Image 1 (spheres, rainbow, N blue to C red):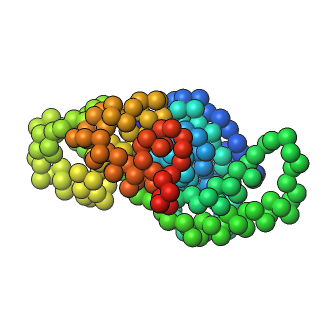
Image 2 (image 1 turned 180 degrees about the horizontal axis):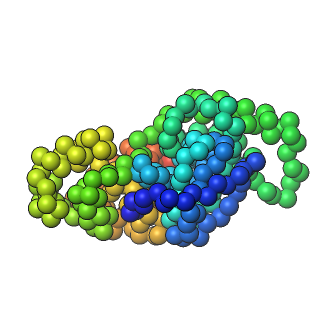
Image 3 (image 1 turned 90 degrees about the vertical axis):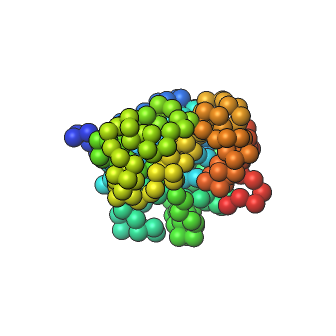
Length: 264
């Protein structure tokens, strides 16, 4: 999932209600922002949300809150069903200034589906919509934010290092080894990672590998293949890291069977 700098021109999209859109594998929605807050839930597939601050990976059973006015773009991995709700600027249950990935409770998931479905049944009345939106807001105040952000470094040496790992997440080089490739000492790179991403290099690389694993699983790769491609020594280590980050095992995620019984 390579990082993309925000372009100079950002299109403003005006939304006045829920949306339900199917995106093809690798289909992109270019840079834009909204005058309202947006809650996005991919009920199928994986959605990568990018901003100038970095990228967020959003699998099913998760949602991302995008504050009003934040320029962002989307890329689908696997055929992706993107459902969105919108809320006025005055309604802000999270009080955040950047996209935030959230755990989605079963109740919140059903509310999102009900508000975005376009099936043959009777349409919801305005009062029913308001009631469901109130339930959604109550759930949003209760759910946990998840650390699924991959910060985008600005320093040219860090960007060169990041490009190497995006090209090959399994690259086993140490920070000192990457330093030889990008022309900086291990100490300098370590300091820059902390300053620019708020993470140490090992934590940032783990986040990148987990982001990459979602795209490979969405494309149909086996758990063993993904584990190797993402640099894990064995599938068990990959499965545990994936379950901790995404609330389900990669096998259950790949098969579309949802979170494990003890997952959030």
